Length: 303
Image 1 (cartoon, helix red, strand yellow):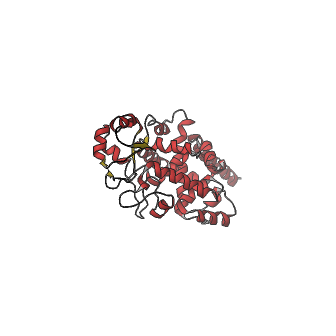
Image 2 (image 1 turned 120 degrees about the vertical axis):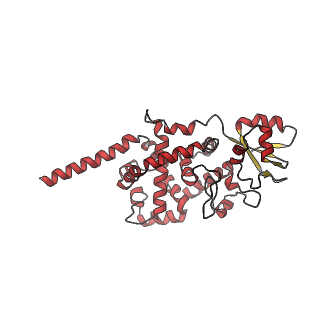
């Protein structure tokens, strides 16, 4: 009898811990639905432990990433709406680069979406001594969305495509075939080792950032996710100049802080627009009318 009482208490405690997560993150139903994850995954013990152990540090990382993501975040989200892909994939980029347009890994992956040079070229990004479009927020986001659509084609679920972004489409196809299911709890079970630890953690990072970011939609006293939307009064527009000019000169003419302009034009490796290169220049959309006034006598085009 004593054993059963202890068992009942244990079960009640476990359910209480689970209910705390669902109460703290009512956004989970929306997040899981957007990415195709079964809602029952919120009760997965491994995921529950991950959330409890990491929610504080990930909340801090979320704030830091969003604070550096002005101009970039609304631009990326707009491009996702245009391509009819869930804007929650912005959290994949958050995991990849924390919205650092300068991000570069030790393995030479670069930019907001951390494309390797070979993968970048396969996605038709220009990478040479003058220009590296992996660091162009607009072109790299379009390339990433196209790539996600490509790998999802053989995987059926968006969360599988998100994991394949980390480990490759073939890796995910083999894991699903070996597991005999697409259920996340089984695929991520560390005892079965269908996927390497890095990929198992990768999707949990995306889900936790999304839970944090979207929670304000469902919890009246949680305004953290609204940070993502506070930059919506401005974003990035690409224009093309058919003349060589340095970024500091452009910044001065358009009355833009040089470091702001540089941050959204890291693809211009030499800090200037090469002559006859057809390179795109990114400017804040709020400076577009000024761009027309300043460069109205020259040839220009808007992407």
